Image (cartoon, rainbow, N blue to C red; front, side, top):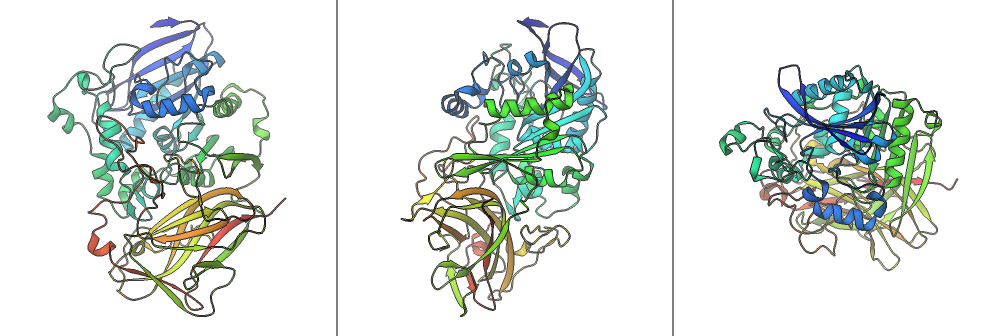
Length: 581
């Protein structure tokens, strides 16, 4: 135990969970005898690894572009995707960081996002609540992984869990992290060996040292064979379940049991991982006290800006400290609506999707390459190479400013020269001279307006969960295509928000591979760590790509695809147009 000004710090505090394993936690708390509520996190990134050491590119971007993120703090205790104790402890909170089983200073078999981890997390919540320095109220806060496992543990309803802030994290690990529309997301193949394995307990001298303690962030130095035997290969485990089976039912949270107050914060530009789960979690959670916030810019930015920190603290002040700050009177939805040039208009709303939405169909004209108010009178087709750029359809120039806010859906009729096809839908915006308008995305500086994916053999809809503007697919069985036969596919396009100026054009591209921003060039530092990078440059989708050769064999997914349009096959997109208030 050490004292740092008005803060008491304890390194590697033992927490024994139900099977007898001892996890290790760092505790930051105020001096003095008064008990305080706690902000808890549990994860695999190494609790004592400094943000700047583990993620130097992101730290440099954040601290340079948004100086308020590092102002008012010495930043000695900053850690990736976690709250800064120096911005929380003085406000009457303890901050507790736990290394998850098999990571950092915690021994055991590493099995990420598993039921075993979730039970550990629940035990940690109850341990924190039982400490003399804690009031018995525990909140969860953190980005990405720390939001995903917060959804999981909240579904177990630990008695002393009092509130959760879920910042840019998936709530459906199949649809949002592993298989986008049934297509394997290769982020997992990069993230696990690059970001997690170097933090495994037992890496010892082979990994980072803590600036705070001078010791390895990951325990003693153990043999490679012992390390390999002490971890479940996350990507291989997920990839071995390409259909939604009992495995996914055990790792996905039951959102109907998430009943604590929650703030779910998503990123418009986080289609690969950091958007859908926040919206779907907000909609499905059973809590009567729930709020949805949606913002833009990079994945790591607003969690640390004054805007984000003040929003989080106001939420937790109300539910953990009983501060009468009017939080309970807030409208349930807070939107940061995008404008070209990465400008934003902040607006409160009463529901999601917005009740005043005009669900507007635009029909694909394959002869003219346009989006029209009605289906073409004559049948038409467009055949494209799925390994190329596909086909793009454009509206006429917009008559006036136009807002799109909400989910979208593309209904396309296709035939394939093989027994399957992968459909990538890209919602785009262009200036009057057809220069593409892009946005700073969660993990790419030039992201399109929206993305959707669907493997044709996964086209079966979950009728109970689907709506006219949000298709949900079962992913429980495959239905192969007969080459040359026409099939209807309903492709979910993840939520978007933008106000486009008069003269701009809306576009939709139908492709057989990931969107590629035309200006993509150079190495991508999005995912770093001991030799692992996303590779291939900033293409507009960050590391969330769909290029695994075993998942997408060329003889199947390289075959020509024909898009059909006209009266019999009215291929179209439905957009969420928001009228002026």
